[in-house]
Amino acid sequence: MVVSGLMATITSIFAQVSEDAGAMNWLVTKYTEGGGFMHPILAVLILGLAVALERIWTLSRARINTKKFVIDIKKALDEGGVEKAKEVCTNTRGPVSSVFYAGLLRVNEGLDSVEKAVMAYGGIEMGFLEKGLIWISLFISLAPMLGFTGTVQGMIEAFDSIKEANQISPAIVAGGIAKALLTTLFGLVVAMILQVFYNYFVSQIDKLVADMEESSIELIDALYEINSKK
Image (cartoon, rainbow, N blue to C red; front, side):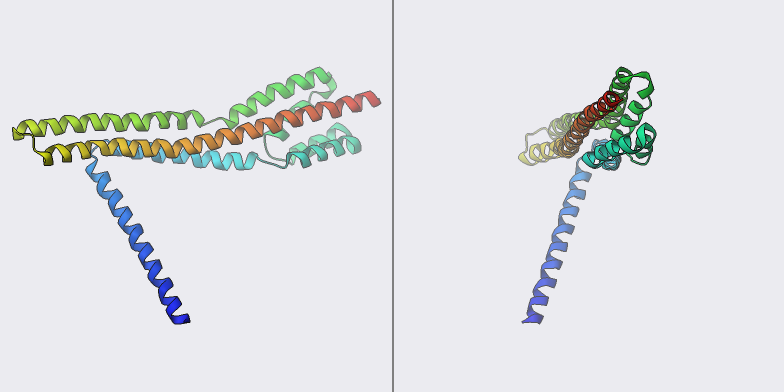
């Protein structure tokens, strides 16, 4: 029983590997048949994925436990004042700590200055979070356009082949059109892949911005409470 089960598992693994190899061979074949416009579409995919990986790394480092951080800041303000709270911000990564630090630097100038600093640096941090998204958006638009351009070129070549053959052969027409549509197919697939990444990044940035706004309000409230006790 054990041997037969092991053999079945090994057989399924080899079948999966064969299927994967077959799919890869199909992709390579279709990529080759697509013509010259497949190269810029592939370049768009590679560049888009490179930007996406950089954004994944950056956004992952920007995320922190905001509630715990706010509690630590309030505790530091109660125990050691503004300087202690600055140390907590310095030892914490992410946009929330940077916004807090900018606000704490303006405490001696009044709470109005703190609010202005928090708003200003919040906008700056949001700009850093959105950095690179414009390129992904460009690649999402560019990939289908390159595909459509390749399709138009392929259709022109198909009609030229019909003209040279001096007859409308189903094989010539079907083969030419199928080749022409490959660039559109690959362009749309690339756009869909990058669109998923883009929407994911936008949702993560919205969460980070909401955390920044909510925690900034809590910081201002904590500073108001400290000033009212003086």
